[in-house]
Length: 190
Image (cartoon, rainbow, N blue to C red):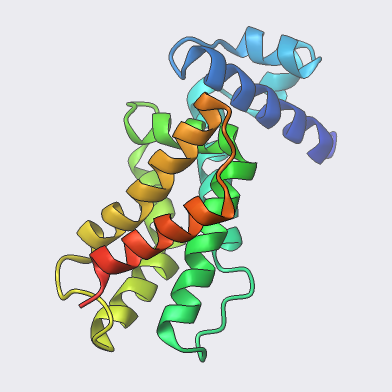
């Protein structure tokens, strides 16, 4: 049995991300993914039995990568607002720097391709962000409302800001980023 080649998996993942951004999840085939990756279609099938399996594995990898990046340099011992702002900035940076992954994950959330097992796994992967919001509520910094609603408000503002900057080709300035954070904080704080 031939060992897995991580380089080929990365090629397949990158090709998939690019194609999903161009055509959407339903609009791509394994043959197109192989062609975009510079591989034979049979090679793609060696690594992934089906498009569904590929999409689920890529979605899990993207969610794990995003959460890992969100918590870079986060110190749970720091004052809550400082730690929260660090995570908020990391989310913004990740979404700017990994726009294709973000587009892919957004489409996955609204598609029938992602199976229950992957949804359960990604819920576990994303638990640190829920714990951060819970901590803010427990310490009296954030509104005592549904945690998921607070996350929607927090992530939604970042998401729309990044999408607007990307599609209008107008980078976010430091002033705009500072204003976005202040509005988010003002909207979430107790």
